[in-house]
Image (cartoon, rainbow, N blue to C red):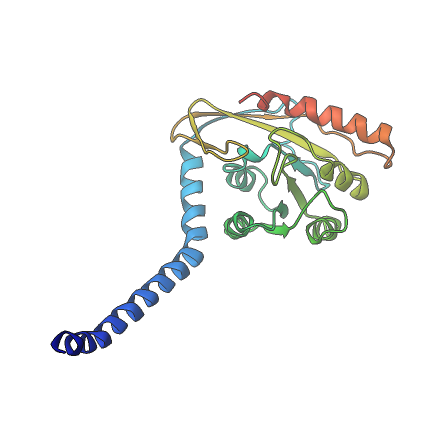
Length: 238
């Protein structure tokens, strides 16, 4: 009987403890949701600033960017440093990035917002998808577009058709970007996402502009695909 009474007396304390635990858990989720993009953008910016950067740009596109908006293309696993590099070398321009509708895509879209970029959530492989329609709408408003042509789910280094269709529908050139690090870590993700080590060498190669397909014919799409695959092939081995 006494143990039953003691148990009954302890229940309010247990309930208060559980309530406090639930409250702390909800606060942690809230803080993670609200602060992670800010902290993430800060860390990415600081990491990028430590890199020993070299840019190979034979066409002079970085030093003298064209007036017309562009489609930037790079592999998904090189994504980490691209927002900070774009902000540094293409100031004053507006950019929208195609981001998956997954939970990871939600985190990425919040991270991009800290750099002043917009995210179009959805698939690039389905022309009727929300992400595809948003990219076209914002692209027509004059924004640059960033697309990882093997994303959002791969296979790694396998170019999907979405970027070609976007280029053809907008009549916009594609600018291939390759990026290599002297020292890096790789995540165990489908793309082996790369995180450069602080103060490592980072070599950026800016390819030649690739003209958009003039129409949706197989011949035009194939020619554009081959040119883009060749330009990005330098990064397809690491």
